[in-house]
Image 1: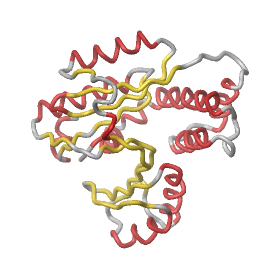
Image 2 (image 1 turned 90 degrees about the vertical axis):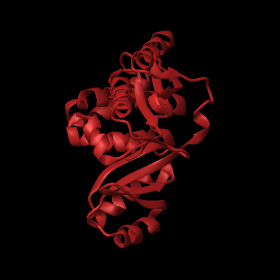
Image 3 (image 1 turned 135 degrees about the vertical axis):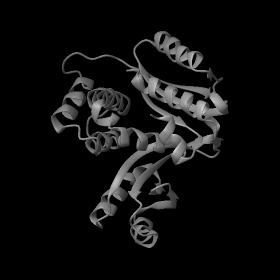
Length: 250
């Protein structure tokens, strides 16, 4: 199992997403506000970034009222906080590359917090560009593996899929970001169970991890980063077997 999408799978199996739904919604609200301000519009038809984030929020079962409140805050209705977007680059144990997307109102505080997490758990911050070059943004849809490859391919290739491959117990379908939600809807309309759909960063390189202690440290870093209010997304290029990932996540 590799990287960010598989970390999402483990969280889903543990029920962590449901347990932390309030924190997830707070982060999505922050992303919506920033998308409105940077795009100059609260209209999803005129703001492509906002459209993508609203689709992500709806997929996470965020209510329309909550989405509308975030848009109104960004447009100046009610209290608002100006957030700065920052991406940190780092190495986890085993040479695993990580990108950390941040939205913060205090860059120095957040940088110190993130550095402390890596220092405590055996990783290190990297210079800008040290790992970012290997990541590119893609849409990823995880489909239940009980469906045949031919069935997935028949629908996916008609709706913008770039690649389809086996990923443990699921099919992993990649596409360009603007098509991810249409692709998800098409697969669901064809009766397939979509387990996850997201806009994510995919690395062109993977780092195999076979040591349980190293795997456990990587997952602890992922977990602590995602617990931080300012951290919006964490991307990594680890490749860990399903059995080791399950054992290390206990």
